[in-house]
Image 1 (cartoon, rainbow, N blue to C red):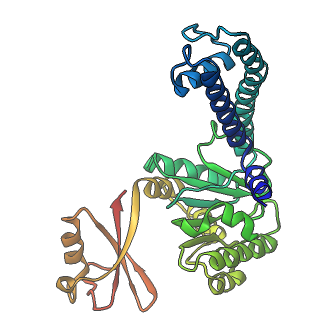
Image 2: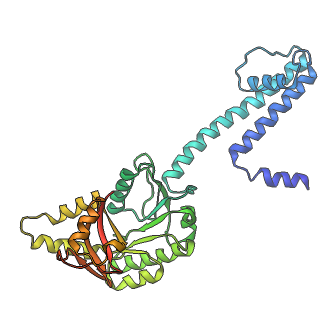
Length: 331
């Protein structure tokens, strides 16, 4: 029973640990045996173990040498067995290192960090998003889940890659969804818009099922699927079609402005902040509220009142209680 228990535990250990334990056992065994065979040459068991390690590794310092025929025979056996074990261990260690790097590139390694950002879907948008995140915080941890990529080099892209279906709990758990900080789901460019939205919504459902409170940002291509994404548990809906249509409209009817470049630089250098109007600004005109907020380097852009967005109102527009102020601040 004890032997079976030992086999059950031992053979389930990783091969490198098994090899290390085997080598350790062999070195201790030979060191103990040589100590009792030649106690004068090897005064302590540790001296015997030291000799066994040095001999098995074929280093041969010569500080401890067996003199008897039996002792030398033990040395021959040690060289034939221990040397092979050590060589095999080093070979396996090197192979395991290379294999781990290959597994990392192929998305087979489970992520064990915390407070990371999970990106779902690899495309040009997520690549640029990754660059922005790392530029903002070089220590940010990013995990990518994608089933279209077969390999991603960590040297080229410093993110942890998980190859698999993001709607499958198994791959979400490999990305350590339970301890992630945020999830960003990008629409699949290889599918029709409705199919891409269905895939994104199914991913939202899977993510929400594994983490009840994590913020989920999702791209939705069609207006008809926005409500479904919200029902599924998405916190923020991005509508790239609406955004691009508005930019195209600006470009078509622009005078001498550069709408696209303006919005791009605004989003790169500024972040938007929404907050409930403070008491000291209630019943104040818009221009006065703007001056007041500018003292804290916040630029007042507009207000949200009863879910209506009022941008750049008149200077005498009166701020009311329950208004949500929209401001722009530096990153």
